[in-house]
Image (tube, rainbow, N blue to C red; front, side):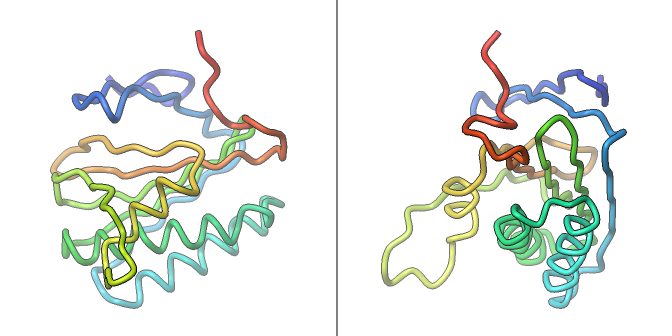
Length: 159
């Protein structure tokens, strides 16, 4: 039921409602990583290189940070190969991390003494939109950042 160009992918949980799939024509990168600690640094470097190539350096710092958090979550919780997918189209940068753990991520309350659990808190705070959907044997966690510099850019407009 996945339609990659302008279609919707339904999700079962209300928090992760259907979302728009940008066209793949503008820019697309997909990289797989082994479950090693170096994967987070490799993913950050790949994001930086790709965004530089697409002329989206204004989003690079935030995208690197959030991708690093999602990759780290995948390494800690799934302990499996993971896949990073970047798509840039229609004023939206979409970053996805897929792994084999079917449990959806949770945004935890962060306190001054918290030593972990800040990843999804940061995604919630900095991304224009984010969500999660089941994907084969696991899940894909995604976030979106606007790329055109205006307020609301990259956000789905109400129907």
